[in-house]
Length: 248
Image: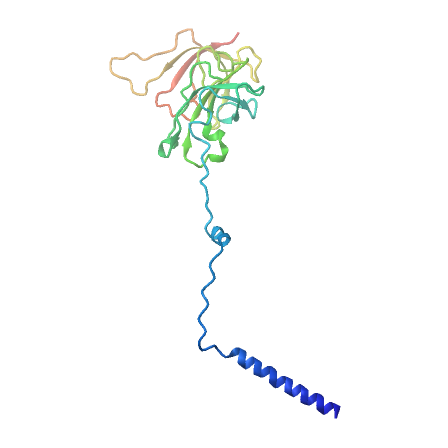
C-alpha cells in the first residue's frame, strides 16, 4: 500500500511538471517584444577609445640653441656621441648648444647634409641618431655643442671637433675599406695616439677645373698631403686637401 501511494504521488508530480513545462514554452499571443538594452556609457567608451597622438620629440625645441646638455657616453664624438638636455644651471651641464639647424622632414631629411658648425665646436651632434626613440620618423637635425669648461677638442690641436682644420694633428690609419687615411689626435701627445703630422694649409680641390684657373697646391715645404675625410652626414663634391708636416 505504501509503495502504491508513492508511485501514484510520483506519477502525479511528473504530470504536473510536464504541464508546467508546456505552459512555460507556449508563446504569449499578445506580449510585446522587449526593447533591446541600451549600451552602458562604460561599454561605449571601451568600444571607441580616444587615443591621443604621441608628439615627436625631434622638433625644433629638441636641443634648441642656447640649451645645455650632458654627455651620456663620455669620449664619444660625432654620431657616436649621445647627450641629453639639462638646465644650464645644473651641476651636470657639460656643453651648450651654440647653433642648431632647422628640423628637416620627409625626403629632405634623407639627403646627406652635415652640420654647418662655427669654429671651436667641440661636438657636432646628429640629433636623428641621438634621439634613438624617433629614428624612424623621417626627421633630421644637427646641433653644434661647445664644452662649458676645458678641454675644448674642437680648438686647433685639440684632437676633436667636427672636422680637421689648420693647426690640427693627425696620425696614419686605415679606413673601414682598408685604404690609407688619417685620423685626428691631440697635438700635445695626451691623446690615445701619438701625433705624426700637423696640418699647416688646406684647400678645396676642384673636381672640374675651369679653363685659365690656377689649381691650388701645397707649398714645397709640405711633406705630406691627404684628403680630409668628409664630416659625418655630408657628401663633399669637391674634396678638401690638407698639407701637413711631420711633428717633431
